[in-house]
Amino acid sequence: MTNFVVRRIGLAVIQLVIVATIVFLLIRLIPGDAARAVLGENATEDQVAAMRSTMGLDEAFPIQFLNYWKNLLTGDLGVSLISGRPVASDLIVRFGNSLEIIVLAILISIFVGVVLGRIAAIRNDRALDHIITGGSVLGISLPVFVTGTLLLLVFSVWLPILPPQRYVGFFSDPFGHLQLIVLPVLALAATSTAVIMRMTRSAMLETLSADFVRTVRAKGVVERKVITDHALRNALVPVVSITSVELATLIGSTVLIETIFGWPGMSSMLMQAVTDRDYPVIQAVVLSASVFVIVVNLVADLVIRLLDPRTESF
Image 1 (cartoon, rainbow, N blue to C red):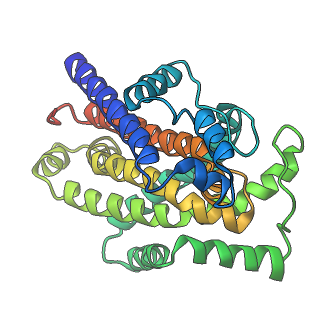
Image 2: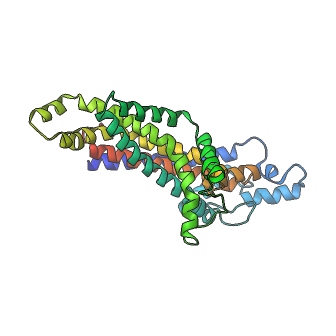
Image 3: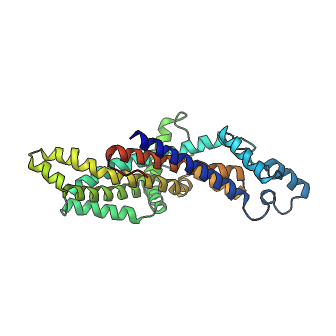
């Protein structure tokens, strides 16, 4: 187990280095002059030269690469070309806001998806199974922006239970913050819940028909323990795997959710930076999202190894 953990962490570090290098190259290989793209076509040559100096583009390419890694290792993500503030300070707040709805959404998805998938597997081919499976098909079929729009329309317009309001932090107004976060979280969780439910049901059905489960039942073990201690534990391996995929998917989904609900997260920060051509912010957000996905995959692999020590290492 120790060797697996060390190797897996080593692979994650290599992935981080590769991703960080790709992000550096993408920003600098954009066609045209990045400095002129920021200032516009009407900028003078002196203004463009000053902007190139600010962005560090007037130095040799190897020097830019070394400075990039030096700043990255010291936590310096640069300064926004628009606001003039350090990117790291703004990114921490925005990333925290996005992480809040992502974590809550995936926790709801795991709990509801596993519970419903377990029930559907136990009640296989019965009325309750058909109802749950039909609901999951609906959840998967509806795009996140449709779900978000419908939730906003129903609970903010038709039934003004959660009226739209300006964003407030949790510590400033806990109740107001909770009112704001309910709909974005539910919209994000809808599809992931359906996916996890279907995976749990499928894995449970396969496990319940396995030889070792029949052996456990033949020994007279109580059915509840058969399902919980044996079938569900083994069925959770593919569930953990699909959950890591859903977490990565939720990052992309936040672009639409944050726009629909006016949530000041990382994705809305990226969209604004793309509009403003604020390259340091774009670089920092893309890098942060990539690091998040790599860490999620690392944790998922370690959890799968704990659930099933027979899992092959790379």
